[in-house]
Length: 126
Length: 270
Image (tube, rainbow over all chains, first blue to last red; front, side, top):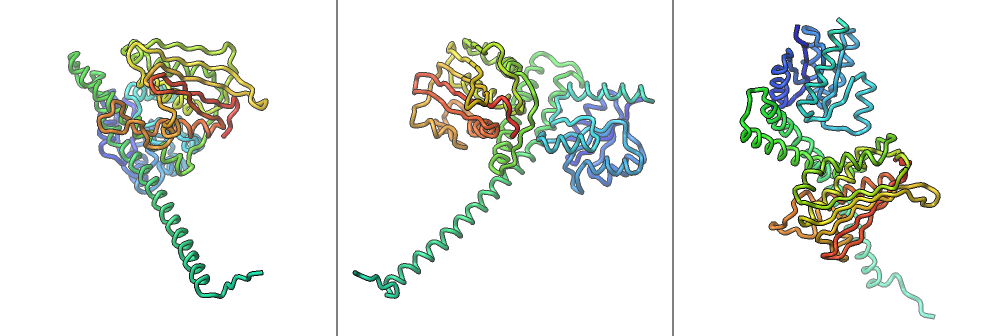
C-alpha cells in the first residue's frame, strides 16, 4: 500500500512540481490550498505524512495540525515546508509537533530520502 | 548693556520662520522613514514571493536531472545542471535581499548552538573547491590548534565565511593566493575568535574601504563590471557579525590584495 501524503500548499506551481516528484517515487499524493481545505481533506482521507506550507490564504499552516489534533486525527508525521528558517519559525513548528522544518526548495533527493525514512516508520507502526 | 528686543518684528519673523522650517524638516524625516520602512517591507515581500516560482523551477529541473522522467544524455544533463545552478544562484541572491530587509527591520535573531569553527571552515572550503580548482588558486587554511568551541549561530557564521571567501575567490585573478587564518584572542577577558580571509587579488583603494560595507555598493557599479551580485554581501556580513557582538574591518590597497578580519565572541547569545 503506497504512503499517503497530503501536501498543503497554496502555490499551484509548487503543488505541481512536488506532486510529480512524490508520485514518481511511488507515493499517493493529495493536495490542499488552504487550512479549511486541508482539514476537510484529511478528515476524508487521513494522510500518513502531512507536508505543510506555513503561509496559507486563510491562516497559518500549523492551524491544520492543531485542528486535526483537536479531532484526534493528527497524522503520524507532520513536516513544515517553509521559506523561513529563522529561530522563531523553527521553534513554533517544533512546539506544534512538526517532525522537521524543511526550507523550500528542499533538494529533491533530500526530500525523497526523508519521506522514505518517515514512510518506514509509519509502516513499522501499522 | 545692550538688550535684545525679542518682541521686535524682524526677530519674531525669523524665529517663526525657523520654527516652521523645523516642523517641515521633522515632517519630512517622518515621511522618509515611513517610505523607507515601506521599501524594506516591499523587499521582504517580493523576495519571499520570488522563492515560490523558483522552488517550482528547481524542483522540476532536479526531477529531470535525476532521471525520474527517463534517462538523459550527458549534454541534456549538463543543460539541466545549468538550470539548477542558475536557479540556486538566483535563490541565493533572493535570500540575500530577504536577509538584508530583515536586518533593516531589526528582525534578525541568533539561533545559537555549540559547534567547532573547523567544521564550518571545512564546509565552506568544500563548497568552493570547484571554483578554486577552476581558477588554479593557491588556497591555504591555517587554524590555530585547539580553537575553542563556538556558541553562535552556525548558519550565520557559515554565511559570513562563505561571503568573504566567495569575494576573495571572485576578486583574485587565476593563479593567485587565497587564505583563511583563525586564532583565539582574549579581548577584555572575553575570549573571541579572530578570523582573517585574505587574497592577492585586485585590492580596494583606502577611500573605498567604508563604501564596500554600505548596502547596494560595489566599487565598480558600471553595467560592464566584471563581478555581479546584489551588492549586499558585505553589508549583511557586517550585520551578522555585529549581531554576534563581533567586528569586521579590512586592510587593502589597490592592486595589493585584501585582508578582511572579523571577530566573533566564543559565546554569542544575541
